Image 1 (cartoon, rainbow, N blue to C red):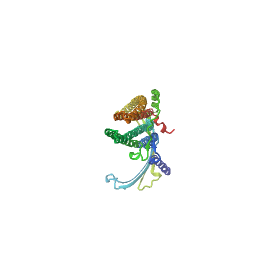
Image 2: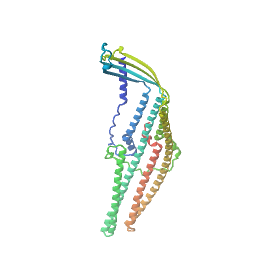
Image 3: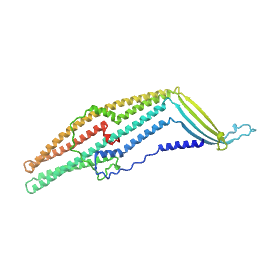
Image 4: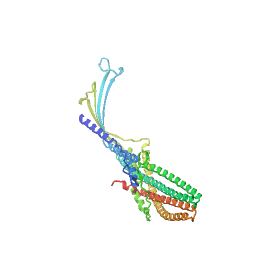
Length: 453
């Protein structure tokens, strides 16, 4: 029997070691082939490289290991023991001097014990259910972290696009006044222009340079935030990568979404809702496990033990065996069992109320995002109309000023209105894109393109 016992122990140890193996570290991503970074690519990189996603996956693996731990309770336990002792008896314990008896001797023992729980008040069943629902909850928590990360990347990317657009607007404003400065200086040289116009235009150029500098710094800062979400080393975008420009010609449509189907879809699809549903099932299983101490516990146990004096060469004559069926039933524990059961029921109640509150929050979020999307759509339409009007007005003021029919003040005012309106249009477009991304996140649709089918 000895060879079989050692083979069994080796197999169990090897299986335990295989389950504890570490996952290889992911290699750094090569982005050298990307010249223009679009939103979908940024989101895909973030989902693969953001450290928080790896941490969420580690939590899933922890929950999976807890399921294996709960399943292990269904198997018998097997323990191998052994000892070697040198014993010296006190003088007072020795028999009569006439009877020879060793005062000191060596004692060697070896044994193997097995125990198998046959009934434990359904604790193992509920414990395994609890661990299984915990694993599902961890998976849904990871999916919810992915949903929120995709939404955060969209927000950071759109803010970076807005800053990039402001840079373009400020540069165009500076170039416009640069041309006006050259014309004003030429008119002043030939005596047809005033020096005050030259000074005024220089002030406008400095203002445009200030706006350009601030927009460039804002774009730089937005790039750091985006790179951090993407999980890039040092939170810096690699050199040579440019952002895709803001889509200014997007068709915003005119159809407003019906909230009721979207709310139903969100409640069925969103991982944070599903996570709380799994936690509710987990709490119900925990309540069942808390009832286990009210039942008796039945265990089958067996042991083979050997003892030999003098040397460690134990043989079959030195071994004996024991087989027992044990029953234990705690009749009173000071009320601790009832308190644990009450605590588990209150935990179940808490999660149920939290789930109901989350469902209300989801419904409110959907309705708010639909309202914001409709407002952003109307804002884009109004700003597009305004851009056409102020462009025409600025060109008219420019022609009148060059013809000497109006003052520089009117031209400055028209140019300032044009710059402001272009900025407002960019903000309205970003608000529309962001409102649409928020609605996709609120319904859980923003993960669809990144999930494997």
